Amino acid sequence: MAQCWYRQGRGLERVPVQPAETRMFREAAEAAGRLRVHRDGAAARARVAAEALKRFDPAFVATVARGSSDHAATFAKYLIETRVRLPTLSYAPSISSLYEATSDKLARAAIFFLSQSGRSPDLLKSAQAAGEAGALRIGLLNDVETPLAEAVDIVVPVFAGPELSVAATKSFIATLAALVALVAEWTDDAVLREAWRALPEGLDAAWSQDWAEAVAPLAQADNLFVLGRGLTLGIAHEAALKLKETAGLHAEAFSIAEVAHGPMALAGRGFPVLIFPPHDAASEGLSDLIAALSARGAVTLVAGEGFGGDIILKLPSGLDPATAPIAAIQRFYRLANEVALARGFDPDRPPFLSKVTETL
Image (cartoon, rainbow, N blue to C red):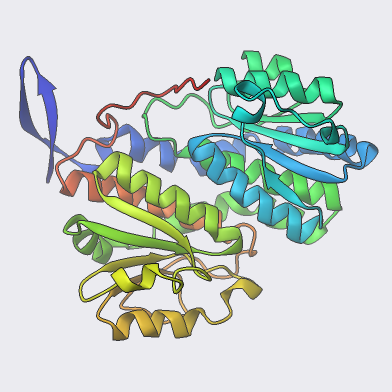
């Protein structure tokens, strides 16, 4: 039984905690059910947003987000650029909220605002400025009764439901799923639409996979790399963030294509490298990289089969390249929960963090 620290009075005491007792575990496990229950409603909202995008015919897409939502925006970038073939950039909220330097070129942009809380002042100011510039504003929001929902043109609910653990899990998964649904309708892609509809079953299959072998190498580490590319780059960033905030573990995310340009020098004997392989053309050369890391003595933990690695973290086969990363991050949340407890942390109450962060 794992133990974690918790504050009682003036001191810290160890208390026994089963991994399945945490809110983080329960909320991540709920994701498949939430998507299944709201499948028809989510499809309808995706169609509304897709029709608006077709009418607007944007020259490019911009995303505005912070934290885990910004990692979802990275997923959106690659999904939109590869499926819709529109340039997609990350637009810093501070450009409008602090610098007051909103470009009039946003008149040709569709801007996606991604947020769990819908209350951060910088996102609200960005939405107001984007509207004044003439952009089409689409909000992918978990809480639709918020100021940001009022500030955008179209709301796409992600239907994750209330999330109490400080670490976002099911809201991140639901946001990725909403993006897949939206792009499937925007491109009228029947294969992607069916992959989205089958996602709850894929999540169930992923959740049941045995990743126990990965707990000890991560729990005992001081530092590690998390790698992804294309549709899994945002997944890698999200996984690194969760290891930092829930387990107090210094994890840095890099692109598979960039890690050899300097960071590779750190990956010596015993250094863990957690890898989320993409399931499309971006996987080219990955097996060689994994072999090179293993040859240096690094411990490679690979989420998926067919690429080699020291520890293989199995995932269900046959998922679409756009939905496989979502299954991978859901199963990772279960692993992060176990690693946090093994290191003596309460994953539901990371130190110095709160559920809603308001940034100017």
